[in-house]
Image 1 (cartoon, rainbow, N blue to C red):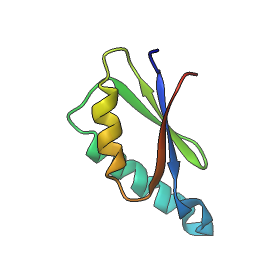
Image 2: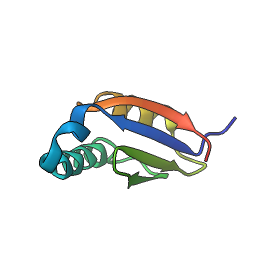
Image 3: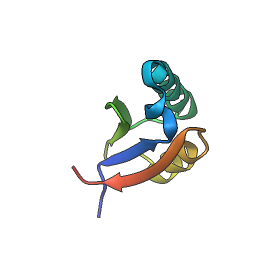
Length: 81
């Protein structure tokens, strides 16, 4: 089965009230820095989660590994949309 997205859930970032947007933006910057040098993906954000849209040639294992090292990410799940 070929997954086409990764669902990234944040930890307590959504509980920070008025600072939430700042924390989410910093997390998105950290994700982009961590995935620098890889291709085949697009980062899309929602209010309380992030989606990584994967192209056919994306290295899902390497992307998942790098995301797992980022502070603030609670879980990463491969999904079909």
